Length: 233
Image (tube, rainbow, N blue to C red; front, side):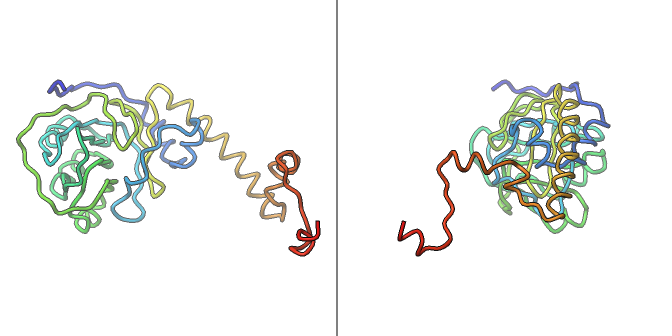
């Protein structure tokens, strides 16, 4: 691993990132072909967390949060820190003090493939965090890593400047160059789902709306009136 901190990265347009956040993780994930979703062990540290921003990537060593401090300097308004590690770790590598520094710089949230601490103070601060674990285990500042290089976080590839969408459903990564196309596909999906919702409210059932009956028949499904009828057949 090369120990480097890259100052300048390309980002998607702020309005594109905002639109992705409005769509939400579930819709964005589906709109980009069910890709980009981080492993479900990365969860919001308190209910109601929601954010979307440009990825500032951090590659750290386990139990060492030095590179997160470096990333604070490089982050700007509208960014989200995404922290990966060279091997699995649940130590509390992020807390309220760093969260305060990031919020002061306009950073909108943090995603951690490590542990987080200070849940209560971070909630009071109104700073959203998604993490692998919650742990009071302290950390050191001893080994240099990297900032704004390609990383893997919770099973998802993340490049600097990729769009990050995070809410109660989890975290999804949208490649920067595909962000506008995903917004378009996501909005089309919302229109389609609104019509489906209307039909469901009117009493139709999903088997008919999604034209499943012929496919079920082809798959061999048959209907019988009762268990007795099944036993007698």
